[in-house]
Amino acid sequence: MNAAEMGTNLELASKIATAVNLFKFQFPDARSDLKPWTNDPETRELIDPDSIDIGFHFPGVSRSWRSRSILIQIRFYQDPVSNLRRAIGVEVAGFSHLGEQWRLSTIENWNFVGATQPSEDISEKLKQFCRQILELFNKPSDV
Image 1 (tube, rainbow, N blue to C red):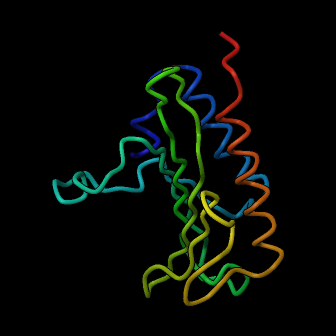
Image 2 (cartoon, rainbow, N blue to C red; image 1 turned 30 degrees about the horizontal axis):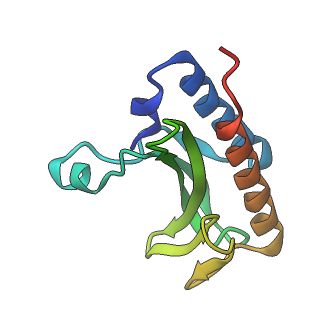
Image 3 (cartoon, rainbow, N blue to C red; image 1 turned 90 degrees about the vertical axis):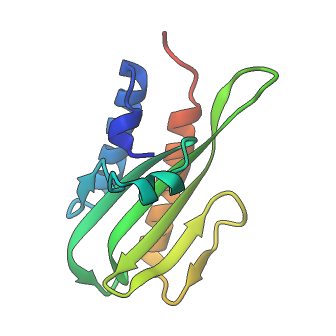
């Protein structure tokens, strides 16, 4: 679900802003997009209400990234017994004008798959960003 729609309280809005800043700290050329999904009926059917989705766009296609746009999906799970909601993983996908070029999921083995892959340096920075995101969203509330 678009990050702009998920920032329904101060704590969550603050964590979303922190996530954007963590990404921009690693990749200062990125421009954030808190509404990566269009608001049409077909897209609405595909949106996962248990995720926070943030897009990032770069000026041109980078040889290091092998893409121009990045979609970050922070996946959540609501435990029915404890009623705790926690981040269970991060999925990152890189897109060019040809469509999806690569994907990284922290839910399985943290490996990149796809037609191309980002450079080793970018890959390590992305994995570090994913670790920071999981830590951020699973940190107990200060309230």
